[in-house]
Length: 410
Image (tube, rainbow, N blue to C red; front, side):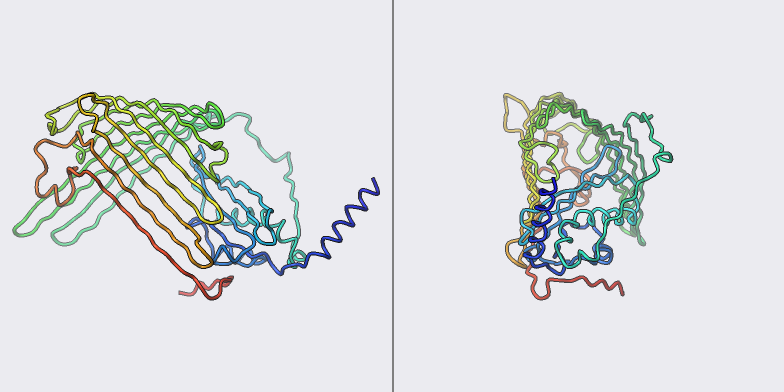
């Protein structure tokens, strides 16, 4: 036993003397708008923060997922590069719902400190770092043996907005309610959203009032079958003046397969969802197909791919819905969406967001069309075979890549 200990100590000593130490780890923090970067720079002074991911030896990728109680599960992936190549680990932080920004950023600091320790001890800063262990007194820890709510979480809210000037006013108000129950075996989520928009024009020679109302109720039940397979039921109830619906009800049994285990969703996801739907619509005005109400089946497909790596991130999705009508199988909708952030080279990065929707299934359009006011104010859904949005950019950063300075003036 003594020989083993002596051998280990000798190896450690040789490693310590043969490996020249860095002054500090160089870190690139990839967390979008979810971090208070100025605060982290102030509290984590034992590392150097860089603005280019290709200039560092430690990259931290932070991703967030919603938990069953409405809080967040934050995953911190520490990826070693250059001299720390092969040294990677991950930590998880649970953030309770309605947490303050100050609480969240302090917990971020604690978690990042833990994750960076293996890198810091191999630099000159190791002499200034120590581990403190605090054990809470078990006698004062109250552990609730059973959750009296049985994992059910309820959240409600209301909102309102008003603006105006002489001759013009715009008001909108609404409310929402969510009821969720999420466990390892199953997941139930539901949302109730009510929105009202009222716009009034009152000038000497013109007066018009525009109203738009939407009630949307969604619910989903998912059962975990194994590490990669899930099945469940989705439902939707909607009332919409915009979509010419007094009400519409859709029920959809679905099944989803994820080529990666769901436990790895913070790093990557590639899932395929398929379902069959039954829909009943009752229309406000007769449609272009002269329908006042109808029942129809449809099938839906959703493919999603997400990947978060040191070179950047990619989120891509394809969704489709086809109305099953053997007399006309061309009633379908296909949507594409994506987000791409790529670190092309040192200091050079590319980002792009896009969405493209091809709609051949606007069966709810009113037969009488829309008035001039409804058209220019977009108070009614209009016939359109496609819609799109896009945003893209490229940036090149050069000069000083290290920037630890925080200056809050102005």
